[in-house]
Image 1: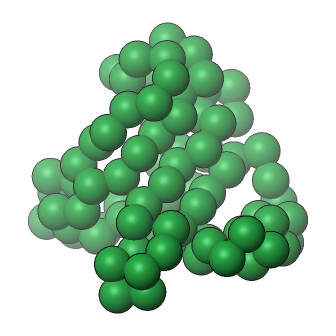
Image 2: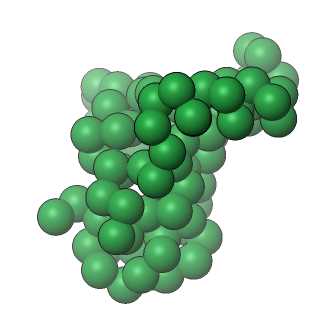
Length: 87
């Protein structure tokens, strides 16, 4: 369970995490961010946006759309409540 607010998390699994499937609970998650080192920029996901709106917003800000988090990668989750994001 994550605290409400910003949480720095790491993917300790040996496989990539599908962001929308794991962090798609709009009642608990506001945004998810990951630094994309090869592109020297941020990747962004918000469960409150449609796929099209997410793409438009991310592109307008110079970000990529975050669709997966690779094994061993760190990322930020802005948790909107104390409820578990994984329910």
